[in-house]
Image 1 (spheres, one colour):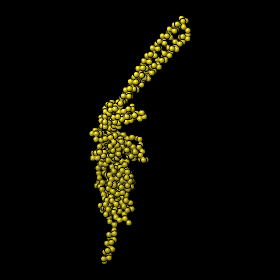
Image 2: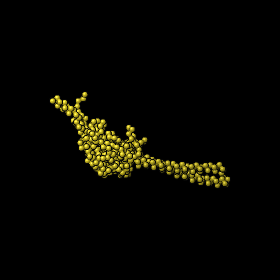
Image 3: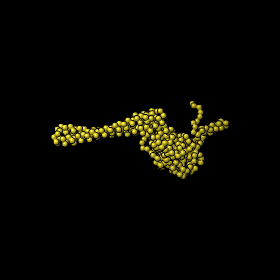
Image 4: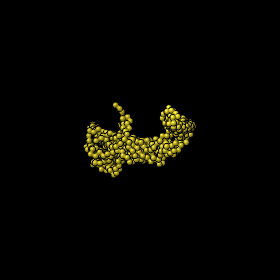
Length: 415
């Protein structure tokens, strides 16, 4: 009798335990599809101010964060050499002007001489050779006037160049803005012989900024100019800022065979909290729907373990990646037709007509497979566009193994 009870107890306890499942409810509410990207804050217009002349910095009128008005002097290069060049060029021009006057006098005298010689030739007083000599002298005098005029024009240009270089010795702000960078100090020599050095960087208006974000090529089709965006920066982790898409550039950016496109997000920075160079984590709202049925994305990734289904379940399926966490954009999971809502999270377009499968937990705690069609996703939930599910139905997101914490590998000795 004892042996029979022992054998019966042995086989009773050898029976597999009924599987346990973690479930979440089908909800009704709003769902927003977004595209996430990372970018850098910049001023809308940033001007690099350099110098067109070489010399030693004699004065600085602005520093970091100094406001600057258009045309305001911001630095002064020692003007001594430029003043000397102006004086020399002015002297050369005056000399050329005097030479022109002298040439005109010589030309006038040669013209009078030529007129007299013509009369004398008619009277037979001089020979033809004397008249020819007078004509040659007159022609030479006219050419001398033209040469003197050209020399005067050349000297006038040299004077204008010297005066321009003298004006360039005073470096002025080209725009209204704020100095965000200063690269020189008093006494430093700058050379503009081959490349114009950058002395200052001026942001034209820090109350209007932009974020240059890198968007993956699989998401760029979802972005449109005018879409709303929100972002955070590390300097203010608890504050969310807003903006909108103002430009989507067509030029591809290829980095290690990964193609991205630059989307520009316009930002209002009236309180001047945001600074150039800050890293922004941007989320652009691409699609939004209100009052729709939505299911957890993890339910679409879930598949039963082999032998874990009840009478209504599917047997012989392998376990995917169970878990109650939201489906990450681009993750590959189980379920027919691909990842649960993954394509919706990345492409943001409904996948109507494409059969996907979730497991509904019946009253006797056994799972049954249900075919559904999904729409857009926010990463955590997926829109339910077709299927027998209704609000508050419980769908399986994870199979719980007895003695194992959800989401953790079982502990035990290795053999």
